[in-house]
Image (cartoon, rainbow over all chains, first blue to last red; front, side, top):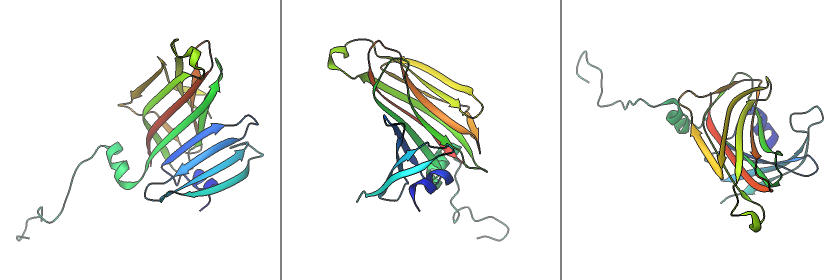
Length: 61
Length: 140
């Protein structure tokens, strides 16, 4: 499952957000029991022009 | 099991608070807002749109902040942490503190499916601050 789907379905236990100067937001998502973290950069989060600019999955093991 | 009696020895039963039970079944949630070098009355925030059919209950909040520059480190680090229903515009909790603060909620504010919760951290000091804020609860 990709990060934006995790966010929209609530399939996570931890989320962090930090705004960037260009208005995009860096989102960190994690789920208990999964040793990995989704890191997304999203433009216009929850807006009409929402767009995932980049995503990476970091292995926590 | 003896005839006519339930098998209490074979079954394990317990009573939990909903917030405790949430952590056992994986429905607990924590949200963090992070902002670096944030100016007075600007804010860092985290938004979350609760999925349809679910309800988010917020059971605690916390925030922490410090001066971005070392020269301001000994000054007051006044700041606030505010929880809103961003869809309706209703302020649910507003808490202030010097350098940080936190609360737990015996009666958790709730956000229904389709609404967006916003937790924002606002520096109120006369210098820029690095701020962090967390809220937590469960979603069922």
